[in-house]
Image 1 (cartoon, helix red, strand yellow):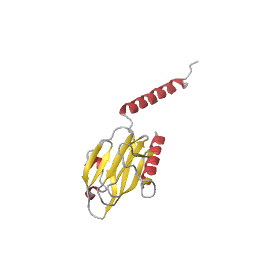
Image 2 (cartoon, one colour):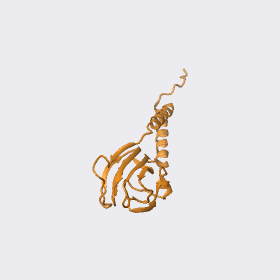
Image 3 (cartoon, one colour):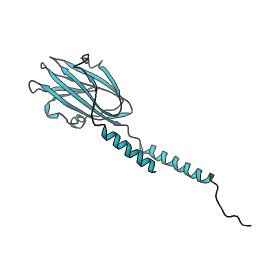
Image 4 (cartoon, rainbow, N blue to C red):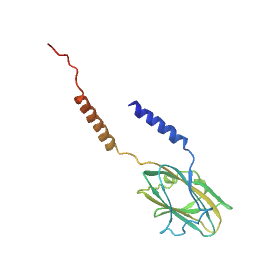
Length: 179
């Protein structure tokens, strides 16, 4: 049992030390993201952690990208940067849903909570669009491990219990012998 507690403590320290996000795409340095929602640019398979997608929109530009979730679920989607010469509103897409008239007031908020976004499945398409202004943006996608159902914990503990009982039955008993 102490090994389990040690493992949990080590994992907690390790995960708490990984606080920085990994930039998985920077459209300012590489090829522009797809303008078409039906055929988004595939970025990456992502696991557990924080991942940034950095981009730039020019006049009437759209950027659509897709990520595959590997052993993880999305905990939050945040806009961490939205820089424009003038305050503007913009559209934001997740899968087939469009959320319009977002503005700088939502920067660093969890859009999943603010916009009541529910993401199911292991493939997510996101995108953004603006009018005629030049905009630099950054999205942060934070993922966590897929939760293990309670039934799996119950089955696991039952198997450990059966294994413990079997090992007790196999061990020789030291009963006193009477002569």
